[in-house]
Length: 555
Image (cartoon, rainbow, N blue to C red; front, side):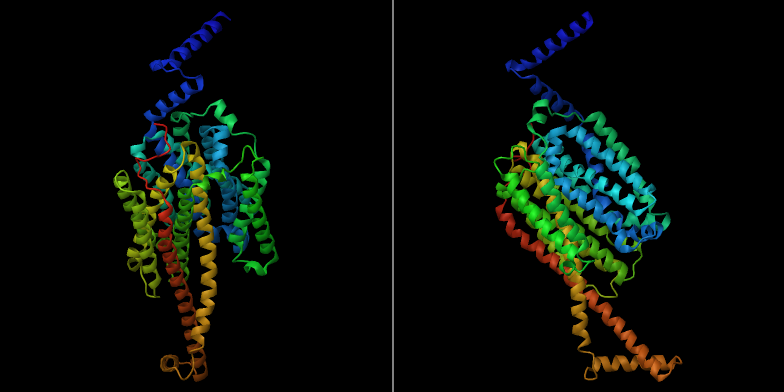
């Protein structure tokens, strides 16, 4: 009893002395926050490393599984349409939780929220590997997607808080490695694992990296939240969560399943699209309503034109990261006949280009206006995407290096300057909300890009085929000469005249189909180029910002 009293008196005296340090009175919560800041400053680089590798795990998860889905379908005894829910479930949960990650971090503290998220992400991923049925895999993918929401948005907010202003450009660029390089490397890693081993390995190969991240954050990161700051988050906005799940969850379902189900010709897609519109409108009205004292999503940050413009640019960058990545992988595997590993190797220049541009951004971000870096990135990325629009059936890996490298360079050169410009225009208390909205914009951009590009390619393939078939007639000298040459070739090899004519027409029909699809892919790349270039107009809405500007940090 006496010992407890002595210890209590000692602690009270220590806090009192600390509270009047430098002659400036401080509350107990201010002392705790100041101590946390000093401890984080001591270990900030190791904390950054932990956050970067956790972000890499989250971003890779969205693309590494694409090459394994056929093998998973065979093992689990399901169809390709059904196995697609492995990816859909993850994205559904991710886009719903991502916008409210700032509230969750404030309510529970950033450190507990990060630790729980990494732990759940890891456990759910392991359980996916050992699940005997598709239903269980989907359940754990939902958990994984919800947990993964914190690994980017909350991590960016932590980085903005623990590093000084002059280092923000460099550290945000280092963090950007996980956002732009991982999607380019993931298909190569996934293809190698699938061809050499099995799809289960994809789910638990990450375990050592996840444990390193978890251990470093647990031991080195000190949460600066206080009881007052956690209480200020308010009670859970249940109605907002319902509207958020209904709006964004339904939207993600429509984007994922629309192409497979013929869009609005399917009643289920139409119903979910209607739910999405109602949910999003209700969410906006309720989150901005004066009666809502603790909104789960702070939409008021969109009153800042810099953030609003940055979110739209992030949306376009998301199209580039995920859209170009996916349609290029499908093109080279299904049309050009690459193996999974070869298609992964073909995407390596995209990662290399991102690495180069991120290094440049890190070196000059303290000296150059972020808006100039964004313009350069979008223009170079746009030119690269346009160059990818000239593939032929004879295209080989080296033929795409320059175009993919420029796309990667453009993405890497714009994604972090956008973050710097957006967060630099916000108050420090809004940095978590801003990072969450940027992440959501990038994620939705990827979903919209994949859905719209796939739909465009499907429709344009049919259009191109009709266009070419209309010109296949005896008046077309090229067709006539090609057909006669093929008939002669077949006849020489022992086929009857009737069989030779039939086989020649079949070869021409196959060529028309391949050329129709190839032309559709080429024009899809050029659409991405137009999107990139057009986003330069939004740069005019961004405020002048450098990494040494008004970054939301505490020192």
